[in-house]
Image (cartoon, rainbow, N blue to C red; front, side, top):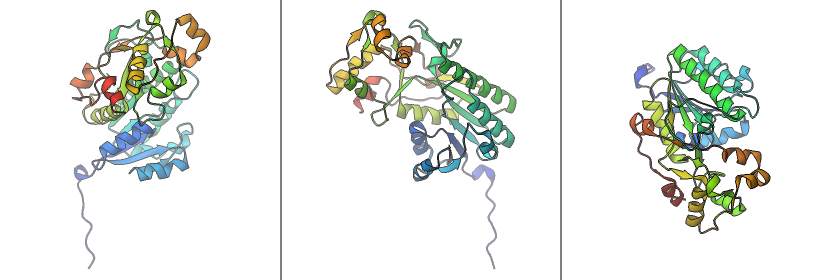
Length: 302
């Protein structure tokens, strides 16, 4: 006689998390949530599937630029971690809009965590600011993120899904591709002279992954949080510190006028915005204790 199937109550099943944009940070999250969550990872590249599978995720082929490939996403996951960037051009983010339309068709998603950027504030003249500060994007890159944020928060209000927007500054880690200042130091790239320098903000990739997980569990509905550490440091001082810790020469200092002549427009744009992010919500609402509270601890870790 065959053994009857055992009915497992829905509450006893592992929840399913869909990671959209499962790169370096997504893989760090994946390691943290297993085995408590079943993890799906959306990818547009078949060649990426073995990497995701080896990390413990179930790969799903789909392309945010081709909405027709996203049709089945809505009924697959209880929560979504959206780390995929917008397109490289324009002032809107059709990728996020396509994802949300697909999720809406299933009606299953209860939780979304989105990785945005602190660039949505524009230049704040070095001011210390919390999440109530109005956005003021001054680049198309930031405008695309503001567009994505607005669609996500509207989706949460309409469907009842709890949406957390993480505004993320510069991500670093010794084991992250391009994520350690030693590479820039080795190239001898200049930084601004003290009189022209700007405040920058940072988060270690491991702490960002832990922030994403904490937001999945404890993020409040339709809430914005700064995913930033406690560092209050100007950009040039950051690279000076990194040079000293790595036993490398400190970078040359140049004026802003010299920077306009020597540096790329992308790099110059990061040197044109100055702000300091308060992380009170990160610590209070998510109850997160940073493993690397300042860049000194993070850089020393490698």
